[in-house]
Amino acid sequence: MKKIESPTDAQLVSAYIAGDEIALSKLINNHQQRLYNFIYSKVYDRDVADDIFQDTFIKVIRTLKRGKYNEEGKFLPWVMRIAHNLVIDHFRKNKRMPKFEGFGDFDIFDFIKDDGLNVEKQIIKDQIEFDLVGLIDELPEDQKEVLNMRIFKDMSFKEIAVSTDVSINTALGRMRYALINLRKIIEKHNIVLTN
Image (cartoon, rainbow, N blue to C red; front, top):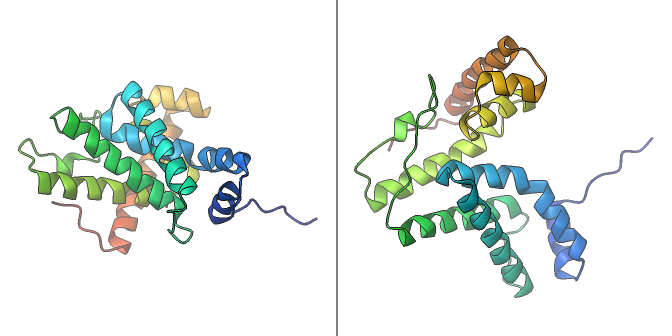
């Protein structure tokens, strides 16, 4: 039996530009969770994250309708860049820089915490975090899920265990392996996570 392949982002973009509105819905559904988690990881406010998420896709739609999209199949990085810029705009408008809170015994952002951020350091910090989200995506699905719930959704291990229908020990184990594998991925890519 032949497996039916889902259309690529590039095919969906082309279909939407050609007038297929459903193609846009599929694009949004394909990347909704990852994009929302990325935005929320910056602003730590559900209402603000919702607004920026919507603004991101308004900008995407306008750009596509004007025929200005030419990212050669790199749809997700392009959308993430738009969201990233809108997050920065949000903090500029509110004349404050994001503050990252700790998450119990582990905080992936500890290495980039700095109370005296200037604009250059903020841009570097944002780029590191953006890269980190990409690295997390290389983890196995179960580890990525636990890491995202713990870091981006600030869920306790008990909540993670209930949500994923596993024991607390299994959730803790997945987090431990996620961190070990994340370090290996960082080393493999020769990434230095400092600013």
